[in-house]
Image 1 (cartoon, rainbow, N blue to C red):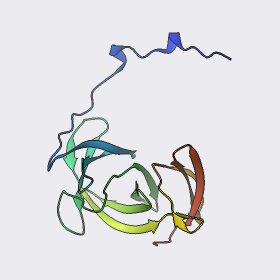
Image 2 (tube, rainbow, N blue to C red):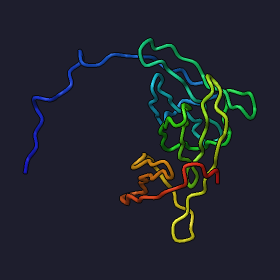
Image 3 (cartoon, one colour):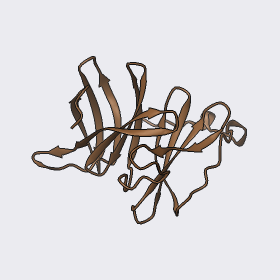
Image 4 (cartoon, rainbow, N blue to C red):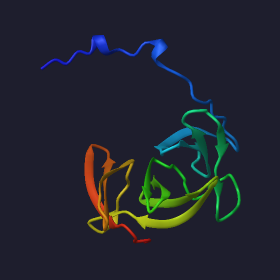
Length: 166
């Protein structure tokens, strides 16, 4: 079956620039993007994966700021290495930023401009580290979060308890 979408091409007038994000500390390579209720969050890394910055952009006004690592008080995040993928979740009135970093997931609780590390998970499959290059929520219940991960051509499903921190 051939699905040609020639009538559905996005033309130049269909795009609107919300913000132009500048890199700092040599963090110029864009990685994960998470979209929340009011803001979008864009992760930029240094090419050697040694540091990252996270931009927060208001979805309506385009107002931009850099997020602060609650543990260090710095705009530089040294634990995010490659920051493959990101997603946001609101629960209990709080917003959480889930970031997939190779074989880990870091979860930050968002408090205005500050990201406070709330949980860190090691990803393993059959007892070996599992490198997730993409992460998204699949199903969320009052007890469990189920993710879809992608690694190469393989998509895997995995779950954690909603309040588990490791």
